[in-house]
Amino acid sequence: MTGTTWQGDVDRRTLPTTVRDDFPFFGSPEGTGLAYLDNAATTQKPAAVLAAVTDYYTTANSNVGRGYYRLSQTSTERFEAARETVRRAIDAEHPDEVLFTSGTTHAVNLLAATLGRRLVGPGDRMLVTGMEHNSNLLPWRRLAEQTGAELVAVPVDADGRVSADVFAAALGPRVRLAAIAHVSNVLGTVNPVREMIAQAHRHGVPVVVDGAQAVPHRQVDVRALDADFYCFSGHKVYGPMGVGVLYGRRDLLAELPPYQVGGGTVKGVSLTEPVRYLTGPPRFEAGTPDVAGAVGLAAALSYLDGLGWAGIREHDRTLVRHAVRVLGALDGVRVVGDPARDPAGIVSFVVEGIHPYDVGGQLDRHRIAARCGVHCASVFLDDLGLLGTVRLSFGVYNTLDDVDRVAEAVAGVRPGFWTTEHPTTRFL
Image (cartoon, rainbow, N blue to C red; front, side, top):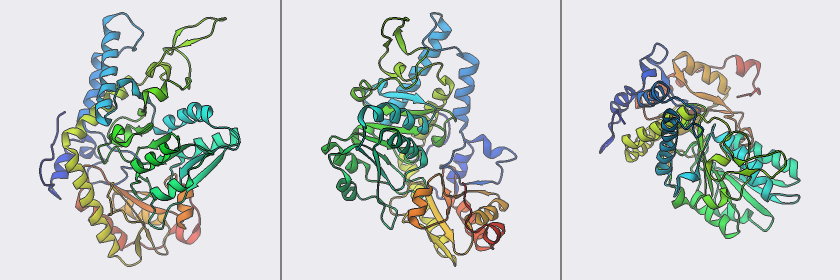
């Protein structure tokens, strides 16, 4: 890994600017002077990641697991080395517990079609929380419709949190599986997933964890969590788009049928005899995988490890608490939830009497990129009684100056097109 390393105390204004030098985007015409605060949607990529992907394509590009020749073996070695890097990053016990996917959405759909189909039938229940992103809601909603099962949302409290006790009370003999967010993509709420998993296991219920918003902000240890399944996306953790990870305990993966079938998934096949599928990752990685994406994801995880997780966590705390303070001091602005309680790099707010899209437009005019709307979590926003929010989501390259620019822009916001012409419209 090449780049900046955080050691000791975090320099609250200048060091993230030094970290920003590791990201070529911020030296581009579009990136220069931009306060990029939409990291929960996707992150910019450090030079180390871009170099790893380029190096793969220029020195090792070949298909994996299919060629006897040396170049194919080299490509396969790079691919499996990336798997090992991911294993170490999340402290999985075995490399074959790490499956490469196209992202969290793919991973959850895979589990709904395999684990869900195996466990769930008419009259059974599946638990989600009331804060789920659509990618950890719609696959289970569709499974419920297909099987006659019931999908139950564990309620969220006024601060946007799920209590482990409330989750435990929802468990019972009809519950067959649970799917929960580690960190809310709307409010940055950190759920007590270790306690929730322990409660579920007491009832024999496996748990799927959506870790897309957790992995960029904290060191995740799947064994310490006693996780059954844990999913995340590469592009949210400074890696390439189009690659992600599904961690599954080896004994549980062995019980699942293939999700997609095709090249690289079988020991042998004929037109008359039963198909003999491979075990481990090849069983679930049909066709040609995104080898370069996996290599880039491994480089991203190594980059974060090189920065140091203690510094990353302190940086998150500094930015979140500063944002809560300066936004809360503005007339008519309300920070939603309690993001400073256990900061995970996200702060959502609303401006009284002004549509979130008008606020987003004001920020854009000040060269601030932030998400506004329902954040693919309209069920959660409905429960909060909100049309939408403006979401600031921080990365390792953001500074306190970025936050101050937001406060200055919001202080001057006025009702615009959306507030006056389409006050109840939402679609993002």
